[in-house]
Image 1 (cartoon, rainbow, N blue to C red):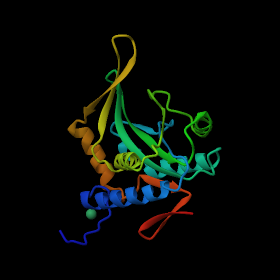
Image 2 (tube, rainbow, N blue to C red):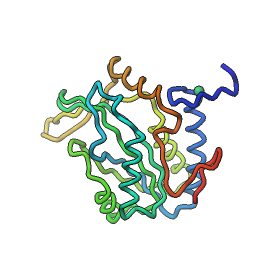
Image 3 (cartoon, rainbow, N blue to C red):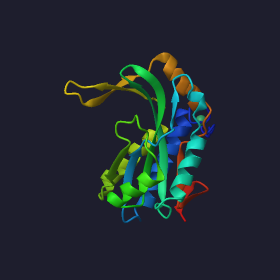
Image 4 (cartoon, protein in one colour):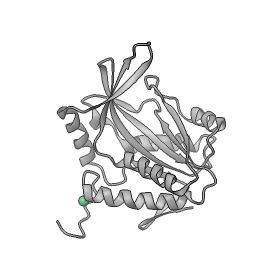
Length: 216
Ligand SMILES: [Zn+2]
């Protein structure tokens, strides 16, 4: 393989790693100037497709929808960095489906107003166990770096998991992570092989300027 190799496909370990490192660096630089940053893990409705139909899931369509919803919401003036992760969800060994999860780093304090604005922007997936999780981004540089690195890793990981939902002994809903079966993994490989590097990532209040991301 040549040194200056650039296929820019997400399925390529070299290109996705290069992009991930660059994004992490740029986002840390950007968040540095934010007075608040909250990391949201969200499961909006209509971001799932049945097992065997992963080719019908379009990150581009999901991103367009999320952008539109946010731009019409009380969060319209907040800069954000968004990314998507994917899992195969199973409930009591039934209803296997692919579920996209939305991660948002948003310039907003973690408070009840944020939850209200997010709830006005999105209807949540009724089958999701925890469709809204908010975490304040830590103020220390090193912890911030590990959180930004972690969420970007979600947007670039190509090894997905099965989340198996079941009822615990005390009647509580629980989930367990499991490996995908080969046929299931093949679906994700096919999807990723058709994606450009960065296809699961989107911004607002920022623009990509050549190699870098800058705040507008
Ligand atoms: Zn490549």
